[in-house]
Length: 238
View 1 (cartoon, rainbow, N blue to C red):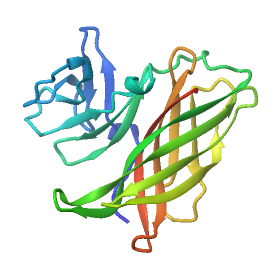
View 2: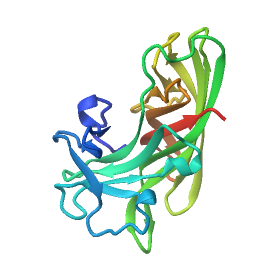
View 3: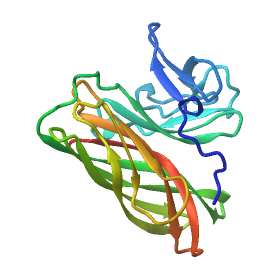
């Protein structure tokens, strides 16, 4: 499997924040905070629906953050994006307005349904792009019992290496969630060896939405081999 050095350490992640000066800032792994601007060489027809951004110091095509415009799909507090930096690192991330401590419900239960994006180490090919790392996408469902402090759920994925391939549904196991906690974690129920985890947190004033990062080893029927995928999710209450 590929992706040597796959890391969930905070220092290896992209960070996004809104500054007091009225603009967004980005911190690429190992870099300092700087202003996030429109990608060089692009002129958005409508800036409100622009998707391609980069750190202002980066040369054209030297770094990128491509957002999904999640608000067009009913999200109010979260966003999902793909990124790459000048060193060649890349990935998917979800970010948003974190739920403050003490504002996660401690009674009742809720189900969150959402979207998943990521990348695999399966190598695809088409006549336009040539060889490429096959993307993965799908859905996620998370069931929280706030009163008991429990979580169950699953993620369903497909892969496109030039042809669509269903990878299946992967149930959560060994979940960690406590009453009132703003975060949660766990692993996927798979017998394939590799990086296997998910990490999530709530977003919105009272946990209306949630974001997550994940890594999943899987068996690919296309070559009958074990492979690795990683990515992010966003989810909200129906």
